[in-house]
Image 1 (cartoon, helix red, strand yellow):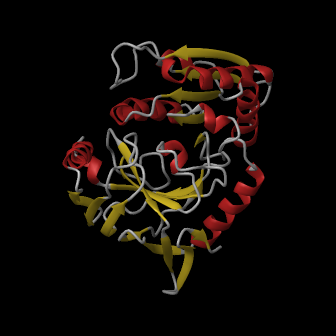
Image 2 (cartoon, one colour; image 1 turned 45 degrees about the horizontal axis):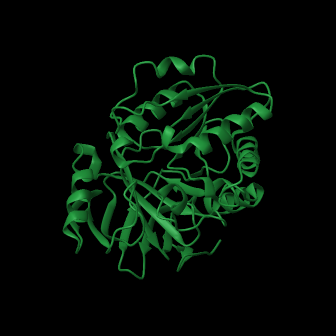
Length: 331
């Protein structure tokens, strides 16, 4: 059983290191009855740091939430930092996007933790050397700053090319003046690829959104940035993924490429942690509004994780540079 005191200290370090929390901050913790102990740890950590701390408890009735509760928007008045401790259900992505969009418009610092688990906070990926992750993230971003495209291949059969010219990579390991939101636990470098510039095949052998890992790989064929077909030996999974991709017109459009770099992140079947793990990458489809350059609108955003990726970047001078080889960083 996770130790609450360790969780509180882990939450405090994460908020101070990543969100630059200060005693003068007003902090709102969005609490979900499904994540009660984690919610309490963030609340107590902010209060221990000297912050004026309040809580908003999500309703248990009417789940999955499709939109923000009517009284929720008013809770951000006077706040500096918002911590979202909530369920990571795929069907609640539209609600989470609506809420995050509001927080971004207000310029608040945000720690977003959908589906966080106690073990992530006690000795897991939130109990980590943040300085080291910042250094690795900076190295990856520097290596990719002149890239016009990347090609991702995996042992499972992925072979996907993404155009990224003009789309800068950013990281969630430290907020900036322009990037004020992050996941907690954090640990990735990501970008929004050009929306019509993805072609090839993605063979997903890791977690998918809030669904967890599939019983057999899910194969997505991608043409001009959009998923054109879904294959999986499990017919129920194929139907479910197709349902998510048909949420709206923008749900099939490429949204993100992310590379994991948290040394304590494990493969536990929860995307919040899985996508931060070494030797993984993830590709998302759906909304990328809010990411640098992203213009695709959708009510959803679903991540698809692959193991042991090899990522080769083509630079502006047409030379190639290995970024990741069989899951290991090359830069």
